[in-house]
Length: 223
Ligand code: DC
Image 1: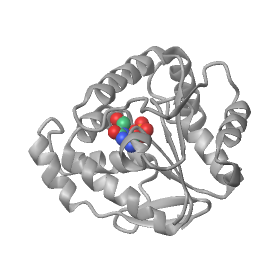
Image 2: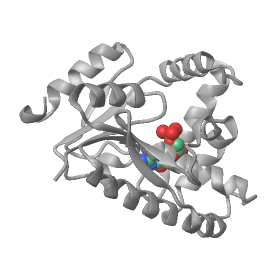
Image 3: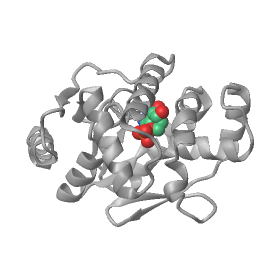
Image 4: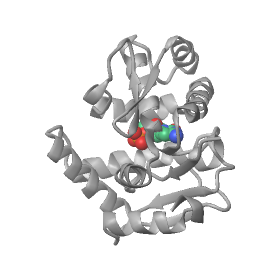
């Protein structure tokens, strides 16, 4: 059975950078589970669905098809033969992703996809419910956290670097806190620090320090 490293945490906690680096270093394919919720959101918006309408979101999710390919150290997602790229990173998708991710039919479909990816190789999967719901039995589970102001600064810098910044730091912080609230309080698979998961506060740590810490905490045979 292929191995899984599970990483959860709120937006801007460093999950993506850390899981890409640890994955590259240890030879685990990086899986961005949030991108699958973003794809569901994107498809719902393209279909003109009101994302507050759970039944409509669930019906739309049933028709979404994604194919998966191990590529360049990660699992790439294809919708109609194309990777969605920055189309799923807009402020509009940020706003609608949490309501979509709250719908049980959406979560069930994404969870089944994620579990099926294990056949592609060893995985490092980042998200909100990977340690608690998707892969609760894996021996390598981490919860990355950081102060909300630090998280907003990081997100803003990332967006500026990619040339897609449309919001100020303060606006990003408000949006992050709103998503945290919805993601942490939803009825199904909320973002939680599950028992037995190692929490790392990354506020005052460099990326290298977090990567070193995560690798040091892996089961001995995986380090
Ligand atoms: O990590 P992200 O910002 O790309 O996630 C997009 C949305 O999907 C966000 O609202 C949280 C949600 N999500 C989730 O509910 N469960 C996951 N495993 C990953 C993301």
